[in-house]
Amino acid sequence: MRKLLILVGSLILLSSVGCAGAFLQSRVLVDESFRDSTFLLDGAKIGFITPSSGNLLEDHWVLLDLLAKTLQEERKETEVILPAQSLSFLNQAGLAREYNEAIKDFQITGVLDKEILTKIHEAMGVQYLVYLSLNSFNQYPSTRLSTLGLRLIDSQTATLRLFVRIIQASQGRIVWEGSAEGIIRREDFRARPITLNELGQLASQELVKNLP
Image (cartoon, rainbow, N blue to C red; front, side):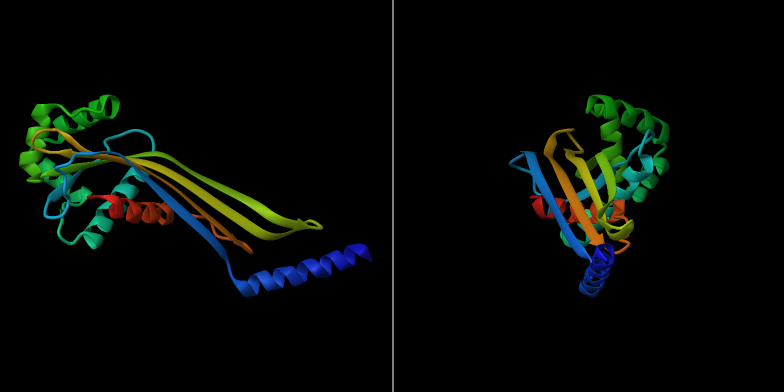
C-alpha cells in the first residue's frame, strides 16, 4: 500500500513537472585579463587565426564560426572576415603551407613569427586577428529524481571554458585577452542534451559584449 501511494504521488509530481515545462539555468562569466588602452574594435577590420590540426579541431571550428557570426550581428561597425574567408585569402596568396607551420608553432609558444604575420596581414587586409582556444567542454547527464525504479526527471548539464586573444596584425602586439566560463543546466522529463553550439553561442554573446 505504501509503495502504491509513493507511485501515485510520483506520477502526480511528474504530471505537474510536465505541465510546468523544462527548467533551464544558464550563466557565463567573462574575465578580461588584458586590454591595450589603444584597442577599439568598432571601425576595425578583423580576421581569424584558424586551427590547423590536433584534438578538438571540429569543436574549435564550431566556436570560431559562432564567435565570428556573433561579431557580425552585434558589432555592425566592425568588418568581419569569417574563418573560411580568412583561409581563402591565405590560400589565394600561396601561404597555406607556411601558415600551417606557423600556427603549429603558435599553439606551442603563443607567438606568431613576424615574417608570416606580415604576410597574413597583407593577404587578409585586416587590422586585428582573433585567436580562440577551447580549453574544455563537458556534458553531465544525470537523474535528479527516481522512485520505484522509474526515472522521472532528467538533468542535463554542460560546462565550457574558452580563451580568446586578439593580436594587432601589422605589429604582432597583443591588444586583448580574456576567458569565458559558461554553464547550462536543463531539467525536464527526458531532457535533451546541451550541445556545444548552444553553450558556445551563449559564451560568444557574452564575450562580444565585453570587447572594447
